[in-house]
Length: 280
Image (cartoon, rainbow, N blue to C red; front, side, top):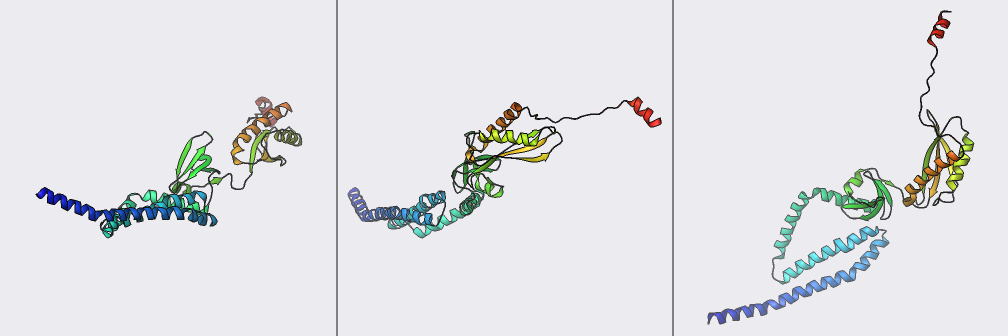
């Protein structure tokens, strides 16, 4: 008899609880539909405001979605009779504790927002930062991912990027490439300039801008010349520089122009003759 009564009460409670479950499910569905309908317009608004594409993705597909899901869960929990105020209070306390424990991560996240706001680089740019040179593969709120020319994947914390001197090789489009060579003092500078300009024009990948050869230093053992050319993309910078250096060396060799190495020249006089002259 007791079993029948308990079963009847259980069934009654389940029947009474079903509307709450249905209400919670409806709340979750409504919020998901709301997110699906508002995400695209929000993306367009942010893009029209000239937000970085990577930041738009983070704001709409990560932060905005997470906020919507949290609100939906809290509202659905209210439908099920859960004390929502206590849950929110607990989440707030937990958030404070997590914030203190993850202060370094929060610093990186704040730095990420600064990067997105200041826009020192974009995905696809070639940069040098924290001793790394490579192409920006991805930017997140916490880190920036760089793929180097060796095809290695370097993850740099955003806080470090903010604190370091950063060089963006792609910011202004075309990039200048320089190769420094030295010639002996006895050689003709105009002749060397003509040889180097001719060889630079034959390098594949340089733009139509006329190569420029200038004297940059009168060193101890050589006259130092700088050969400058332009390339379309920073991606070609190092490969063109290496090819240009080799081409300059071969061109100077073919022209018979000496490339000196550091040397020391000593003048030794006959000590006996020198003494005779001094006492003569």
